Image (cartoon, rainbow, N blue to C red; front, side, top):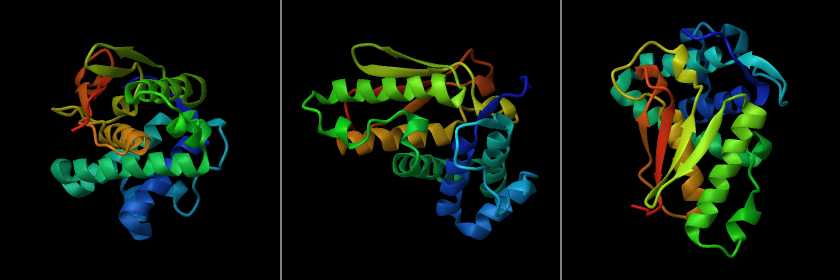
Amino acid sequence: MPEERMMPNDALRLFFLAIEEVMGKDGMKAALRGAKLDQYIDNYPPKNLDLEVRFSDYAKAEQAIEDFYGRRGAKAMLMRVGRATFNYAMKEQSTVLGLAGQALKLMPLPMTAKMKLLLEQMAAAGNKTVNQPVRLEEDADAFMLIYDVCMCQFRPQHDAPCCHVTVGLLSEAMRWLTDKNFAIQEVTCLNLGADACRYRIPKTPE
């Protein structure tokens, strides 16, 4: 298990709001109890960017959902939570994701140029705000968002990439930006012993 790492209060708050939207209030309470995070029941972190909550708390909530639904059922559920997390971030605290909001959607640029701008903003937010080192690479066919630290490092070891929340979040970000769906994949995962979590975002929609 890596050394404990802190994240902004609002990153965890938005994640909890997203879980509550997908699972309902009672489901959220059950998840928090299952994660042994009872201190957050009816008491989400405050809406600020102070680094006062733990990556491991985020990971425990993810794992509790997986334990509740089983790995197969939880994948779709966690991707829905990721999509809801993006939408809450857009609505409530776009600085968490570093998003320029509607201005970016309306820029008269090619689709791939806008995708790159959005991914660069999200990477910058990871580095500056979320305390999660991230970088963006690109080839002719796809972008690759690479996280050197991830909540999955604080979860039990899996047999396949397990960062479904991030896949859902990135999927929703691209759909919001382009009104198209992209087949985003996590191709390497820190949880499995890789040196980083890598997400492939194809330049061509489905």
